[in-house]
Amino acid sequence: MSAYVFRRAAQSVFILLGVTLVTFMLLFALPADPARMIAGRSATAETVDRIRVELGLNQPLLVQYGRYLTRLARGDLGRSYAQKVEVEALLASRLEATFWLMLGGIFFELLIGLPAGALAAVRRRGAFDRSVMLGAFVGTSAPQFVVGLLLLYLLAYKWPLFPLGGYGSIAHLILPAVTLGIAGGGWYARMMRSAMLDVIHQDYVRTARAKGASEVRVVTRHALRNALLPVVSMVGLDFGTFMGGVVVVESVFGWPGIGQLAWQAIQIVDIPVIMGVVLVSATAILLGNLLADLVYPLLDPKIRYG
Amino acid sequence: MGGAVGNVSNCVVILVDTERAVTARQHPSAPGARAAPASRTWPVRRPPALWARLIRSPAALLGMLVIGLVVALALSAPWVAPYNPAEQFFDGLTLEGRPLPPSGRFWFGTDLLGRDLLSRLIHGARVSLLIGVAANAAALAIGTLVGTAAGYFRGWTAAVFMRFTDMMMAFPALILAIALAAILRPSLWIVALVIGMVNWVWIARVVYSQVLAISGREFIDAARALGVPTPRIFWRHLFPHLLPTLLVWGTLGISTTVMFEAALSFLGVGVRPPTPSWGGTINESQSYFLEAPWLVAFPGAAILLTSLAFNLVGDALRDALDPTLRGRR
Image (tube, rainbow over all chains, first blue to last red):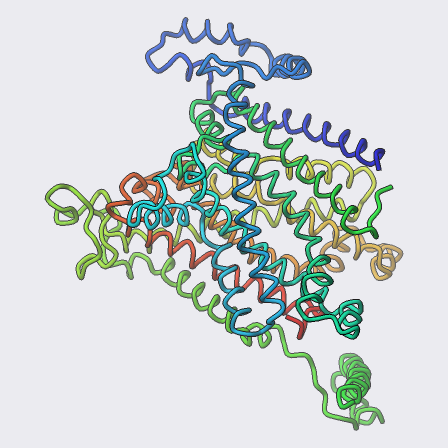
């Protein structure tokens, strides 16, 4: 087990190295001059050159990348070009907001998706099943910004139950979290339903029924527990994508998370910040996958990692 | 009890049927097929064709209807659209300069510049579909190439390609796409390429596992032993097995791509402004949508319906193509 964790962690380090390399090369290969962006449009050529030398942007790419890696090894992500602040400080200030949004999003996804999917499977082919499946399709096909703007219009403007975007309290969190929950909930409902259908025809479920267990007990104790397995890995994936920043939802609700930071940094080609965000996002995604794989054997004793 | 008997007879019928099919194929005009003793049996029940299975599902039928409608609108946009999408009408804004709500003259209302929203949406269908198809084709091509190469050659090719795929999976896709699109100042084709470059990863994974399973089977060994050149093995022996998967993923992928494109346009890094695009319209009117909600509702509905339609059809295709699911869902 620990050998497995070690191997996965080592793999992740290599993947992260690859991510930094690709991002670095992409950002510098593209026709955008960070020195010019920092200096502003009216700056003279000398100023731009001075900035370029100051930031080491005149060095060969590989040298710059090497420098970046050595600093990274010491835990130094560099300084933002635009805000003259350490990237770590910027990231830290945003991670908290992203964390809450991640929690809220996953909460609503599960709250919407799991009961709907499980009930749909139990009442297969009934009217409830059909409407859940249609709803799930609509939820997964609706662009998040449309859902978000709609929620804002209805629940913050027409009937002002919630604040019109912003950050700071549970009330602020609900609408963006529900927006994430509607899209994700559709996926969970579909997955939960098909996992339940797989499970409900198994022998042990029949045995439970034959023993005379009540239908509620059969569903909750025997079927549901096993059907929840694939859900776990999906929560792991969602943890990764949400911690990596949900640019669109954050932008709709003015949520000061990682995604907004990335978005602002991209617009001004603030390369150290972009690199930092990509690194944090990739780490979150890898961590989410790893966590899901580690929780799996705890729930299903049949799975063992060598 | 009746079910069991039915099953047994089905088995026999299938055996007989294959036999006859083989004879018939070998000698198209030979009377032998008729003379074979086994042929005087129960009526043959074949599984219905893909198409028949598809249109049996009301959801798929609805999806195909919507896709047909959107494609027709996109193709005939200049003739169907009531106005020129770029024309700014003098009476397209209120005296205070606000957009007009839906009315008899402008069915879907007007946008912030006094242009007819319906016409812009009809023309926007072109952008969405074109990018949806092009980006998806790019993703399918890259994903199939990478997945096939890795699955067929295995060894270090697989190691290199699949580790690269793993790395791309860890990439925050939208952030990567935004960065590329923002810095490249995109045309329609660049947006498509960017989306394709981000989306191929999933296809590569699926294709890889399929090729891995198929290329271990005897007919591939046989082809190799016969000295069939590798490209021909790919094309004639492997590729047909991948088609159902690619069909399903291709259809579902258009749905994802349409949403992805809309998200990029919404963030202002999609196709550039004078070109009408659904996500772009919402982006332009975002700060104004509380007073003019139709500017979000109509393009939003267009994106939702298109993406939903491809999703429904893709899902029905998957059910229709996967024999293990038949009769279960």
